[in-house]
Image (cartoon, rainbow, N blue to C red; front, side):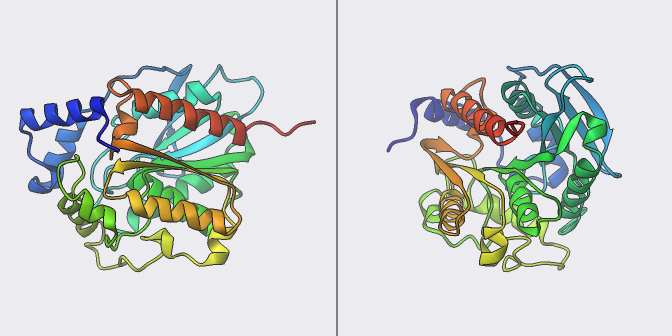
Length: 308
């Protein structure tokens, strides 16, 4: 399938602007460039508030006023290759998932590499997830209805946390996840340049993330596709979203396939005409709006209160 017409127009616009790719910048410059690209909020939720999630900064998105029936809770980890991104860069996504699903969202502001290489960001996400489970009732949420999710590097964290099983989880939302940091799939060759995320860009991100020499691409905490069958089989139901013109396409598909083969209820939805990052661009791409609706609906179903 060819590149989606809206996606092609957007990529041509990015090329015309002539902004240097992230891998040609210092991390601080790349973060500033990403901050300038923060999309607008299209689907505002009821309210947001800052939260200290066990010492990790976070933001709570509420679908309704506090005091009503407990909702479910999605603990969300933003993308950005473990190097860029923050609460603001994915504010639109968290608003949309909260307002569309009817469940709360806790967005985690984990530490970034290379200043804080692996496993610092993962440790923060683990801490925040445990804190969310332990404090769910105080947040107006049901501790039995917690999900983890994220996009790109954020969904890498979500997958790893689902495999580690440190708290009971009802769902995992994995949006074009990094599941194999060895970067040796066919989609890396097919989509190495020209589609926003490049092979060199991913190499830059992984190099920064692993710069502390505390882990490697063969570590299942870095490449969750390498987790054991038992770890994967014990995970919660999953939605995996992939894009056709994405270096991460094949590893996302392989992860979804492996979960399904091991008996995990898994939906894999592929957007063949899209590129990496499209999910954040609902103000520009119809496929992103459709993907928001899909993700929110499956999240709503997974976190619905049990039938009485």
